[in-house]
Length: 165
Image (cartoon, rainbow, N blue to C red; front, side, top):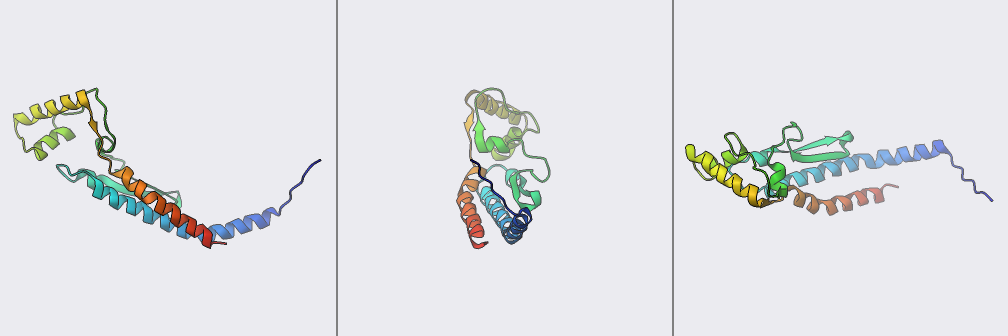
């Protein structure tokens, strides 16, 4: 016993193309809207630091003709801040973080704690030693923004597909 299924390939392709043309612009708009919502909320969630470098480094990039967005530190420039991921996820104990001149920690000690001169390097070293020994918890800013927008995005995409017939 066998079953044979036949369909008109040209008709199917034509129907799929028609549907694609109907929902494609709305899907792209929703991807952009959700991406910008995530970006805005992530910027608001960034922990207050010595400067606004992390906030300013957050960028939104679109690819795949607008069907995909990427939000993060330096996604447009390719120059992500080294500490962006560490702020988001934290750091486990082990190994010294960069602490010498021109490191993020050195600048943080100088700007946030107001310690200048030879003491800056000493304080940066002591903080780096503590981080190496104990690590520290992350202060998520991007992931919570994504989790907040995710159900909204799914709901809106479902609406788009329901209205297209």
